[in-house]
Length: 110
Figure 1 (tube, rainbow, N blue to C red):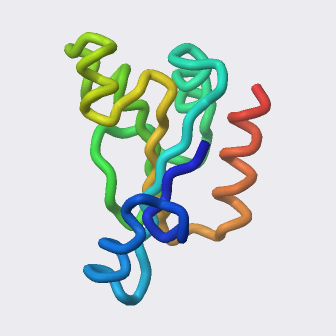
Figure 2 (cartoon, one colour):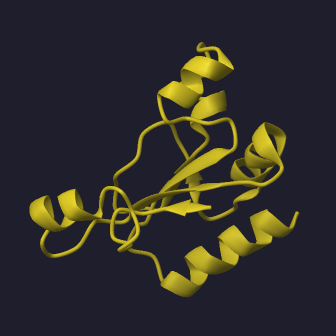
Figure 3 (cartoon, rainbow, N blue to C red):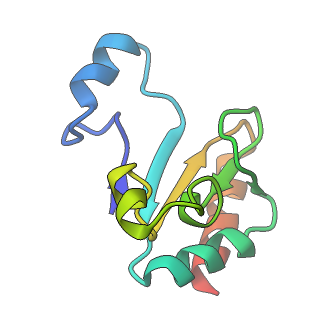
């Protein structure tokens, strides 16, 4: 599943439209159907996209909060914090969209 405040069915869409009238930014999350291990494989398989603990840059960045920023929490605490073990967060940078898509695609296919 994908979570992006710019989508009309997002529970954050109204707030995004209010506070970001020109667009909801390039930050989104998605879940891997294989859970924690698959999410880790994806973030470790990207080649152009940078694996980092912070998001928001001119470069495209990716993070797996459950194994990075929230690794000290229990699974229950991670879920409560919005960092379900299957969740990956991405911040889209200024690279060519095709390069970002191709890198993410090859990582998902591994």
